[in-house]
Image 1 (cartoon, rainbow, N blue to C red):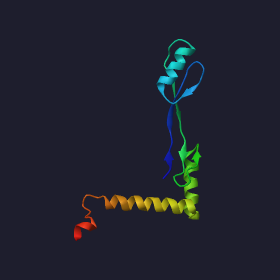
Image 2 (cartoon, rainbow, N blue to C red):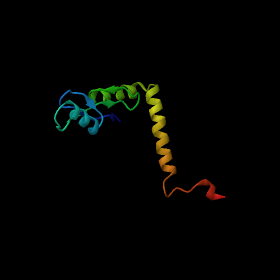
Image 3 (spheres, rainbow, N blue to C red):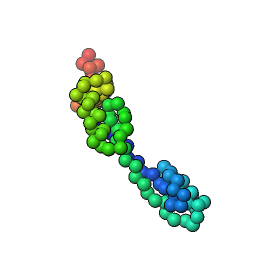
Image 4 (cartoon, helix red, strand yellow):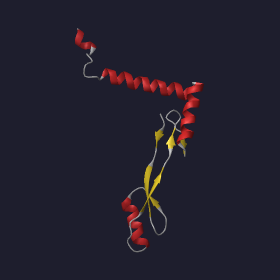
Length: 104
């Protein structure tokens, strides 16, 4: 499972400075010149769910994950352990699940 780290940045149309939110970019635009709407800039990054390396291309992250899976390396083993624990916890918290202490 590749993690999509896409986020939106805002860029001042005058000086080109990038900001994480619209208000900061808008304040910069006001300081730089007349008021214009900041430009929206989408930055796309993809993260390997196993080793958390970040890649520019989706395919690169997918290849990284497949390499861990094929090699069954420490990142793959840890990822499998975490996923198993998530599934066990989900099953334990299911509304139809009866707690062991209720069988006394």
